[in-house]
Length: 304
Image (cartoon, rainbow, N blue to C red):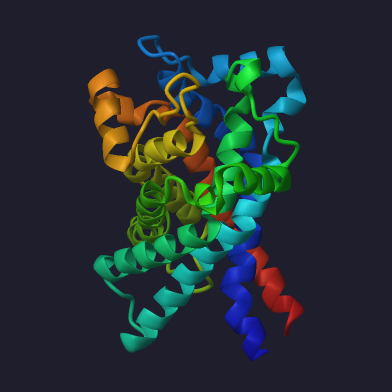
């Protein structure tokens, strides 16, 4: 039972994150394409979420909406398991250190940042594969990589570009992971306390459904707001390829990518695709944070 208790936040968190990613994958696909549109089509207005999905279905069929879902599952089994499991483990340790009393928001923030950073370092190769699988059909046919699946993407990337290519965009990805965890998990924990007070929810047997729904809506918004600029930079660094004429990469690093986005697309360029990104973050956060309660109850019942 001791091992099962230790593994509980990792197994339940990873299961909830994987389930949520499968459900919202078409939204995530549209989000990545909206983010890369400004790079591939400078000066043109970014199409809306509905137009992106419609064009994908027209061009490649309904199944194309789940392009890269195997990479998304692999990513969440590694990254999602680590970020949620570590955050819960760190948070529980902080509560015990605080004599069982709820910890303040700063402690929750530090827990979210630490767990997010560690999880990103573990899961970045799958993130690289996911972004490349999702963005490949946007490129001209002659420039497409045509990966068969997530494992083909990982193996070919390593062979063709070296092991370091699996960690392209690691710096913004760490910043994204930290901001995402703070926005989603730390803000959820804080919002849960506030919403419970507003709704007079004693939370004796855990938060009620209205408390969970309200808290997860807030967490979805803060997660999107905090992490989108870093997610945008990460997507562009991960999807970039050398110029066929000069052999140079479009961006030399995080700072150069940020400067170019600011110069060419303005400050709002960092929030390109916010509608799709929020449409991804809010349902993703809600599905994880609501389903994890049921998954945890089932897990505990299995080991009683």
